[in-house]
Image 1 (cartoon, rainbow, N blue to C red):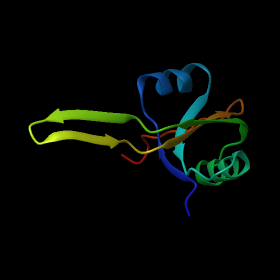
Image 2: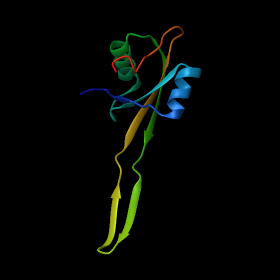
Image 3: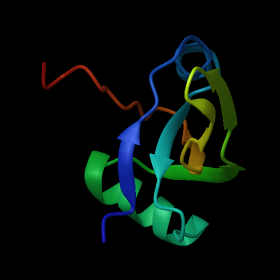
Length: 96
């Protein structure tokens, strides 16, 4: 099982990485903060100062169509905001 799924690259996440040295990742739903910290340190070779996690529930959607009511939902997501110690940076665009 992989703890890290993908980095989140959005306007807010990019601003946090530039100003506060915090990076956002989408992580496995059953990963805890210690596992996330170890995965970041081994994958990117930086020292992690703190880890904050956020659990997002599914968004429910309803569509009214000719054939009737269609109900669905999105998947649940767990995100981790990782603050890297002073002097450390993570470059997501180095492999492009």
